[in-house]
Length: 180
Length: 240
Image (cartoon, rainbow over all chains, first blue to last red; front, side, top):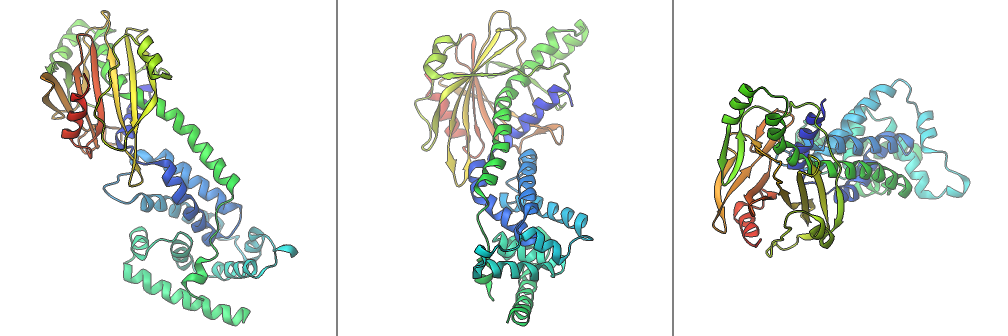
């Protein structure tokens, strides 16, 4: 790319720049982070993927078209693609032991109920099929609406709702059976 | 187990981690921000570079035929993407307080008396010297946050010395509209060059007005199409 090409690229960025990155960062960073936590567990991978999502969004922000999608939808499409890639790279090596390692074993002083429950939930989530865990991560980690999830995944809004309803029921039953 | 149960395990990212990522992006943002402001200047001096350096008289003559005057300024209107020049140098800018900028800038820095509510004047002016000082430029910025989006407004002031000739800006076909600002001819420009499609894109939400403030000084007021031409013209007309 010549220097002039680079200049033109910047022009393109400039003309489309309507994003307040401070606001975006403040609002979306925790949501993206929690999407990855619910997707892969509470470990360094969630931080790495969150960081990569924002760096990639920044690098590609000239391609964001506000007339086509909400910024959060665009941002989560990047996060989702990264999650899919990460899952494909690691699916043969992920096990409950990995989940335990990534989560960090609860230290004696941290053994309060909430942490135990999260650890248990994480183990149950790790056993879900990929698509179901992704929907849980988008809904409960990222706090997206069913409509936003439908736009991202290509499923219908009704389908998203019914899958999530089924998954939550399944989790509830497994919780009762496993942890009483 | 219900929705609330599942949501309660969200947590805030570690502060140090969040700040580290923010810093990484912010460093890049500052670097790009400076370059962004250079873009328009680089585009319009393309014609100067192309027509005065290393071009055969015949090619130069043909190119000059494409230049026309609209609203008292020269433009080269073409559908050909202009990002083909090599050896283009990206220059740095210097930020100085407004009063200092007024003291050292060759041209007149005159600000609008009307600015839409919510826009805040950046106390510093960016100064850039193109062509070894033959084309000094000052950029005054206003910023605002509305509905979570930043909408910027900025005024480019370009002073042409005697050494600058054939100054023209390269724009896409159909982008220009001739208007007047306080009775003086001016040009309203919509859209911008799209790097992805390599064409002039009128859907790019850029809107600006360019006019000769005095014999040597070009004023180029940049807003957004969301702001609308009426507001932008009102701002321009408040510059006396």
